[in-house]
Each structure stands twice: as C-alpha cells, then as structure tokens.
Image (tube, rainbow, N blue to C red; front, side):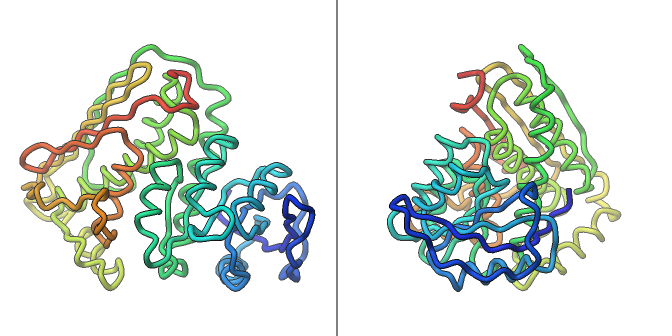
Length: 333
C-alpha cells in the first residue's frame, strides 16, 4: 500500500473522561476500516503542521493525543499502524511512551519527532524500541519517506509473520554490486530469516532491518564509491549525483559489498565488508557521548548502534560486524 494520508481529526480523551478540543475535519471523513497513524504532541499547532504535510496524500486516518497518557488510551481503543510522537511532553514524555508501547503493544512501530536539545533522549528512545526518528526541522523533507519505510516494512512483515515456520540454523553469503536498489530485497530476506528462526518479533526485525540497510548503504556509498556525507550538508542531490557517476568508473565500478549472515536461535551475526580504502575508526562519533549530536554522517551509526546488540569495525574500517541477540518478544527468549 503506498504511503498516503486522508486526514481526519479525532477527539482523544483523557483517563479522567475529559476530552481534548475537537479539531475540524480537513477532508471528507475516512471509513473506519482505513488504517490510522497516531500523532502525539502537546502542541495543537504542531499537530496541525504534521497533518498539513500529509493531507495531500490519501489512504490513512490521523488520530491525535497530547501526551503519552492520552496516546495509551487511544491505543487501548484502536491499534494504529504507526505512532508518530514528540519527545518533550507533559505528564508522559516520548521516551516513556516508547517503553510503554514496546511492553504493551510491541506490534506498533514508533517514530520520534526530535527538536533541538532532545538528541540524548532520542538515542535512549531508539534503544528502548523506537523504529526511527525525524528531526523537527527536517519534517517537511523527511517525514513522508521515513514513515513510508517504516510502514512498508511493517506491512510486509505482518503478512510474512503469519506463515513463517521455525528454523534451527541459517547461513548465507551475498556479493553485491554498488546498486542501492539491491539493498531493500536483501534486507527483507535477512529480516525474514530473523523472524523464522525466532530471534525477534516483527518490531525487532524492523529495527534490525533498518540497521542493516544503513550499514549496507554505508558500505556502498562511503566505502566502495568513496562519496562523502559532507555533500549532504545542502541536500542530497550532489551526493547521489556523484554516487551514480562513480558506479560506472574505475576503480569504483569493480568493487563489491560482501555480506555474511549466520543465525542460530538467540543470536544473529552479520559481517558486511566493502572493498574501499576504509576510514580511521578512532574518529567514529560515539552516540553514547553526552556531546553527541547526529549530523549528516551520524544518523546511520546512531541507528546501527541503537538497533543492534553489538557493532564492531575492523582496524581498517572497511568491515563492520553487527550482532543481534534475541528480543523479549521473540521465540528465542
């Protein structure tokens, strides 16, 4: 299903029975069987802004809550396809909400909206179970694509999860040319393997899949094609233009990405190696540092470390090992 939103404003109720002010409908009311996205933000202005970004699309209802407590009340009545939440809110903030959803509604992915000064909380929320995040200053450009990725992964995995059987062991090897379109189908295969072997539930597989996707794209773009993230300071156009050119130039054209995956109940190990010159791993940013603020080159590293149990680089920086251990929701536990 393509990502789209038919915006309908819904009244959300507090546990004490009082209702938030009902907002006027922007479009014709959608049928009740249309999937919903729950937007959680204490600012009605921010709620309207998010809805405005998405109203030109069609196919989704938008539910609203002002904080985590109201969001959980909505979830008790209706399970949305995704929760999109602010971090800093009264009564129950976004981090606590992520933890509650992970415990009570593990099938529902959560995407964070982060503002200036909330980077540290965002890192903790990703570790606690959030599927992805979008900086508020980048909502106009990135929100639709992030939601599309999370929702498409979620929809595919929900269908697959119903028919997957258990495995006791699986090993696989892949050799990829530098074509980014090959990454999503490979990640889908590896996600299915993690579910089949009982390593994690659908939410855990979604998070691990995002980490694998970031790692594979890093190997292609930064490793084999040697395209710097600095080109993304003013948008992605120059970055992708150079990458497309180098795919057909030597020495970049002949380079490949090698992927080794080994899974047993309770543990999966992925080794992703490129054939580029590598980088100085001592200059790698530390997402656990109090001073860390994700930049154009830091998003992938943050997601990899938040969603995987271990992330290790070799000494030359052209090989990364990602380890995923069993989640609470998986059969391995």
